[in-house]
Image (cartoon, rainbow, N blue to C red):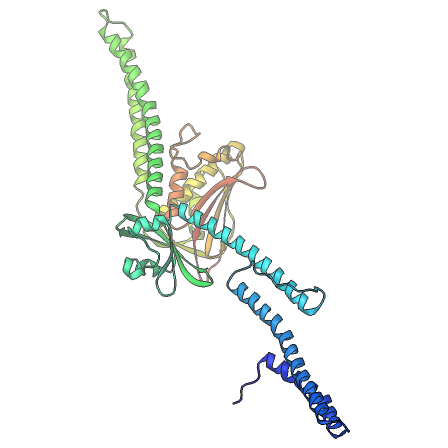
Length: 443
């Protein structure tokens, strides 16, 4: 198949064709007219050479601007945005092309600067992260890794394959999860979060690994500090009076002359010591009960029956059970009874102060059952300490009811929220638990 002419050659052929028309007309007139031979040859050469020269000039006129444009575009492709094209006029076609290319070069240069600044800033952020960051291309070659990742693996990562590094299992993780890692630079519990990113226009797999062991240790340390404060407060509350009374009684017994009312003081003092020791024993029993909550023995609990039997146990305030859908929840019936008894008990105590009532209702939403216990009390004054163990404002309160209730809800995959009601006086406790529908039943 015959190749087409190049653009500049086609322009020259077109110019020759255009010059051939007048030449075909002029040459017969020259050779058949009454001219001498020298004149005929001279005129023929002038016509032929002039036509060829005109075609070559037209070819060069088209070729040079196109070569300039090709060089400019090649510079843009090579990301050299400093090269510019010039043209005498800016209002003709070629001038407009040169102007547009110059503006395109300026725009690409500014965009490259922004990309480089953003990439440099991102690189600084990634390098400063405590989390290990690794990006791998589709061939399993590491293309990006921060210092934390290199310290964890114990060598330079960029350019190496995941097989060589022994971390191919990390790239097989398809969803965020916690794994146990034993690598040259460290071992422990890490949260692995995979994602897909594009680097230099190519898809890469990005893995971010966070050492959760430090966070767990910090949470554990804070929990121990809170526990020590609570235990110290309660134990000191009991040991203080016991120590004071014991010192008073010892001083009375050491006196040379025994007082007439010493026996009465001994009796009252020993009663106080006994009461404080019993209170301290109850506190330790409550603490043991809180920390030794067994795992739920999962069965099927009918929500309507669960709420109704709990409401029937309360006698201090009227508990109204509002109708709701027929639902069942998977859970431990005894533990769920304890959860709801605590909530209804608190609501009844609050409503008894104002002569109000308690309302229990439930609804289904997005595969969960939401149980709401409302009271007509004065509301919650201090929501910050609601779930602080052993914190209570009641004279006879233990401070573990709400804590235990929330612990039971979370053990069943749910949650517990206590807040003031949005409409009217009082508070509401909202329990959210996984649910399954019950066919053929209604309440």
